[in-house]
Length: 485
Image (cartoon, rainbow, N blue to C red; front, top):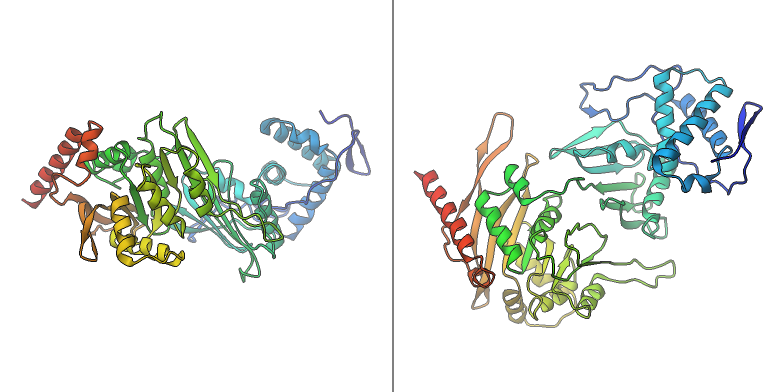
């Protein structure tokens, strides 16, 4: 594939023409030949993702091997190969270079170095072992020397390190360039996504004082379902049945919650019950929703270019949706004047539309929605805005990340109407915290508030789901009374 390789002066040279190599990305991961391997686990509060220790001698060794590797391969041909074949080709050449240059290292050290270089050339360097793990929910890089991860709701420091801030910035640039974006001093904030849909945020100096900050919200390979949320205790079986019905009967749902509370996961779960023949259009800052329906159009905002032109805002996307014959509009996160256009869409025949919003309670979500419309420059009386909210939104689902790291759906609240100047709501399900166990895990239960005929029963009847709704609420009420006894 790479032509005949000849060796001279301890180096390796391909007998084919090659393009200029890309910037070298180095990873602080493999050990120097003289350094022993670290233990896989140590009891120091740090999660050891990297198996090996590192020093300056290692970087010198790796840099020398990396330079020889770049001189030995045709990168255009490498890019045309599949991942496994490309890795094998790189490993073969690196092994030959190590032998030619007489580097002394153990087999395990050589394997670590081979993995590092393959990750540098084909992946995201030090991030690769973290991205490969499905139990990690968040990766938080605070400068080149600190990397935290969230596992099972707990944040842990890892031993993953970057060589320096330039190395970290190089990896960030590689990530965002895949979706046609950039991050540098002139544009230091960037939202992007990985090929698997994981959400990426980068903020670079001079805004980030202690070096680039990279945050990745990872998505599980196996998408969560409502049944799994029940298994994890996030919602009761009866509450999950009510959520299923809400997704099925085209109720307008606003999912509210704090950062990391599981709003997007819950939105994905609800959209699973949309009929497969419905046309769904999603609007997001960085596309991360994973809808399973066949008729989905995914739209994404665009930041301005270097001249400050060409920006496409969320509001423009939502307004354009109305010209695309949508049956449902899904907004990944409502955070500005697009809230007005979403409410207009919900109120003009696009039932079943959904969105998420940052708020700590259903009542606060309504206040935030009103504030966003007001700050968007719409000179409407408060009562008019509240009437629009009441006529548009059927249910608010509140998600929360509790102090023990668990995620719970704490409220399923329906919006009833107006009494004077006040929006009237009623809870259908709530989550009560009862205490905590010896390990510090919170104990609680989901309970029905006794509502037997919620406001959205009419929609359930229209879709032949009334009996299922009534039965779910009756079961929840019976369980609640048994608990009280």
